Length: 194
Image 1 (tube, rainbow, N blue to C red):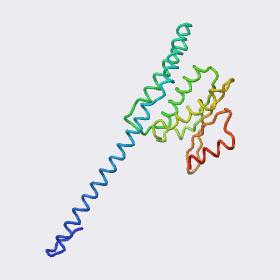
Image 2 (image 1 turned 60 degrees about the horizontal axis):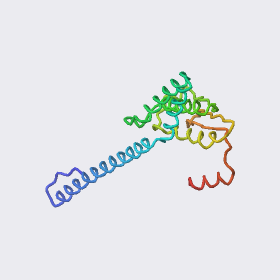
Image 3 (image 1 turned 180 degrees about the vertical axis):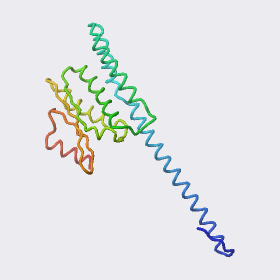
Image 4 (image 1 turned 30 degrees about the vertical axis):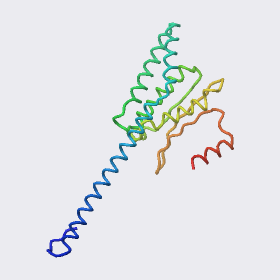
């Protein structure tokens, strides 16, 4: 509050201004701590990348090398390197959708090499590829589709990732042709989400 008069209100207004400054400083500190906390939580999640995924991929490379399947070793090595290069970067928590889709493509290529019975397609409009999204938002959803939808099916399966746009929203839809859920399982899941 701006006040220039020399009377009893000057002291009150001066103290009010000091209090307002302290409150503003506290708000900024709390905001910065929240951001740091969220970044730390995200970094912790990134560090918990499933080690079995890495072990299985490395054993695939070992077995392919023993069978002298040079192309499979190279393909797995390239996809694995790109996958881990992306997932271990922590400097930018917001990326272009194109980058997330490239990560998913590497992940699905790795799974396809390992399982030899996974087909997949990615179809996203060009206009959506530049949209900013949080890092690692799509890969866990696709991983769930592989693990819970496809992996235990003897004949393999298909995963489709499609982008949809309307005047209000951009959507990414991840679908698999796995066994699905019963109506009761779906109700329970929705109840947990609420």
